[in-house]
Image (tube, rainbow, N blue to C red):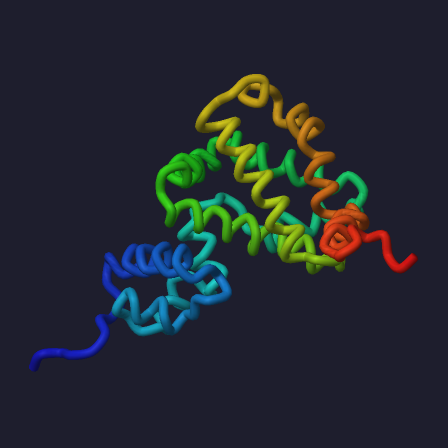
Length: 211
């Protein structure tokens, strides 16, 4: 009797799910993708998505191929408080990519220069998995905008250091680069005047108020 419907688990099921995930996450972002849609795109029962990866977050991390779980790694960084958080995040990001287990992630960063899907995956990972968690833990104002600004800084830094290899960022110790770039990330994450200034410029009188 011929079987119909979605295929059961088989050796290529995991890769089929990852392939579907890369496409959906790049097109719709993390929040716009569901486990049911991942299963439908991979032509498998959605239960198999959870069987192989545990959760949507697990699929996402595997699809992006970053060698750490932000839910486990970030609490230690955030525990040190908001002060100096930008420098700690940059240092952690670079230490992760410098380590041997971080090498597979460089393929995604390299692809991000020319491939729109890879760019979207990398941006979503940094924004949602890393910086959104920071925003939730620190109760920052304008968390989405701050995460986007900080994410652009980290992604750009990775491209300059590992792909374009522009000195002195390329070749300098991770701690030194963190000291250079950390204050900019810190401003994006925590400066209370950052968006107040933008909102003032948006008023008709440039923020001067009623005279």
